[in-house]
Image (cartoon, rainbow over all chains, first blue to last red; front, side, top):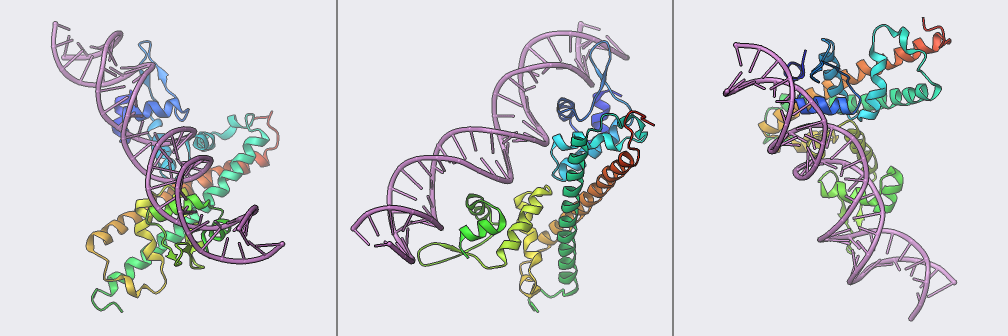
Length: 126
Length: 126
DNA sequence: TCGAACCGTCACACGTGTGTCAGGGGTCAA
DNA sequence: TTGACCCCTGACACACGTGTGACGGTTCGA
């Protein structure tokens, strides 16, 4: 799959895909002519990246999280330094905080919507 | 409570508090001399704002969400236009997506950490 | 050969956050 | 009164990260 197809599949501009590669979030093989060539799974990976970016994580952190997502976990043990693990723990906790904050506020919005919708008379205000 | 105390309580610079006010996220009463004066509850509000910003929501959206959080909901019915409600629904759904994305990835990180920690021999790699 | 798709790169836009400066005032205590 | 704090406004500039537009040039496929 070349960059155009990945772009269409993920709804992400080619420009941005190159940017993600520049930031080290995705990698690509290259044809002899220099064209990027992507694995099928990259599509999901890109969507995941976009989700995390949208959730406020910077690329620097996402880059560290992504290796945790690969299925055959066997390979990644060696490169897990104590510092890396500490960083991951910290990030995991920050993600948990984000989740709780979002849930609280999401529920508040939900509740508000319910209240407004059940009391369908704006001019009553009570 | 004046801006200095609010700044200390929330760990937010005075500069940034004025910025939030400029963006319409918080309001302040003014003493005759022009000093900003804040209610006790503003501290929580500021922390909430910072949490939402950290979770990737722009000030524009946060401004619309904040009124949903006030307890005596009675007052806000009148200014709930259909467009506003639609926006809130959309935002609620986007928050839900963010939450799910974060939970997925947080769990993956957690699982990764568990796996690495139980297999305490990096050089084995299996 | 022609158009579509790709390449790398430069430059910019936007939002959040910060520092700082000038120029003004309020409050309190020694 | 003086000094040490606190606060006000407005403005300029900057940093950083994400995302985009546009450039000229190359390669592919019909």
